[in-house]
Every structure is written in structure tokens, then in C-alpha cells.
Length: 312
Image 1 (cartoon, rainbow, N blue to C red):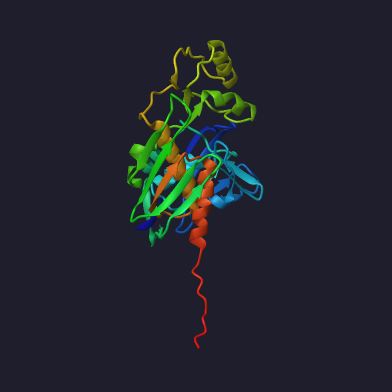
Image 2: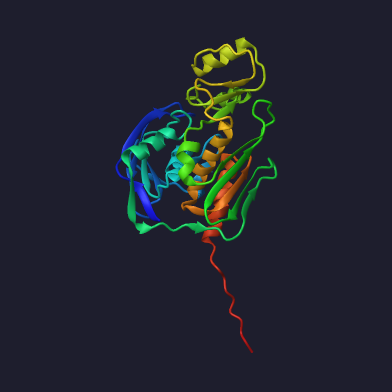
């Protein structure tokens, strides 16, 4: 298969999930072997950051890249869109320190990629073909990601929370060609019990019920719900039973698990290559996704070592 880029540039405006800052993000065609790079157009020297797992410095509730002190956050949904649409090369320009959250999924990016079109380039794509198992295991949380040899690429995710509303869920992607219809529109989620602490740490300033699913799995007095809504600047809702709080109904019964799979794709794209292998992920998250991606890069960079043996 040949490498691919987009046929022409497109821009999208939105606000950052964590900063709340309004921004414009622009995707531009790029030459062969360019990969994914991000330019901060709001800074004087317009620095460019290579989208690599080795440049990730922070992974609490999002994936954040940093090179020489220049940072850009919440890149995972946009990169999942590029990877899911099998785009090899793209320059992304952003005029703020955070990508827009849009509706909490990757669907707007995907729609625009198909609107402008995809261009096949002159050079062959070189896949990383997995020849042995690669794993990252987090003993503290029990999370793990495993990459197994295969002739094709697929991802299988299981999530599990101590929650009656969101217990164990599974999601699978058997082929990247299914990304648009199976995963691209699946939104991020947050538990109601996490919102207060996230706000206190300066996160989710741009969060609302249009860009996230709230998992309401413990009853909270209506007065407290109203206070949280006021703090977040969103409309008050009367909630009298456990379930999901959002402005748009669930798209799939397992939409949270599908979104976690979307996040895995975005974080794995930072390996810098398309792969032939099967990924199995149990309770993935941005931190373990990144450490797993770094493991893959280490294996990609390994070279055979041959010892010279003197024959007598």
C-alpha cells in the first residue's frame, strides 16, 4: 500500500476540554515520510512538535506532548482520526496549547478528512510487522496492553469499573476500514464523582454535556447537582435515577468501551508506523497506552546483534 495524505487543507474551530480556550485547528497535506507533526502557530517562532510517544510528558485525562518546553494537549482524538483513516503524513497547526474537544469524539475530524479527500503518494508504506509478543503490564492497576503477531491489524479492548452503571464492557475493531462507522463518533466520558476533583486541579474547564457522557452511578442531592452545573456553566438538569447524563443519547450500548478503543488508536499512532498485529487491551488509559507505545518503539529500534566466534 502507498503512503497517504489529505488532498487539501481544512480547519475546525472549537474549545479545549481542559483549558476551555477557543482555538482553530488546521490539517495540511504533508510529503512522504513526514508522519504527524504539530505546529503551534500562536507562538512567535511557530515551533513544530513531532507526534511521538517519546515526546509525551503527561497523560492525566489526556495525552500531552512537549518538546523544549513547547506543549500541546488532548491530541488523541485528532490522531485517532488520522490513523483510523489511514493517513500517513499530515501537518497539524493549532493556535492554542490544546486541541478542541468538539463533541468529545473524532467524528468531525473524520468527516472533514473525507470531505477534502485522501491522496495516495508515491512511496510505499512500510508496516511494522510484529514477530513476537510485546506487553506492558501495570501491577498497580492491573491494566495491560499486549501486541501479538498477525497478518492484519485489529484491536480488542475490555474496560471495567467498580460501578453498577458502567461495569465490564468490551469493544473490538477488526479493521481500520471500520473506524469511521464503528468508533469515530464515540464520545469521552467521566464519572460524576470525579468532576469536583478535576475542577479543583484546573481540568475540564471546557467540559459540558455536549462533549462528554457523565456516568451518574451514585445518588447526589439535587442541590449539589445544581451547584456542579453552575460551577461548570451548564444547564441544570433534574436527575432522579442512576444512569448516563448527556444531551445526546448513547450511540451504542458499549459507547464508553468504544471510546477507550478510540483513545488506544490515538495513543498508538504515536509509534509512528502502521502495524500488522493484534492489540489486546485490558483497562487501558493514556498513561499505560503511552508506556506500551514506548515499548513498541524500543522493539522497532532493536537491531540483531551477531557475535563473531573464532573457529579453531
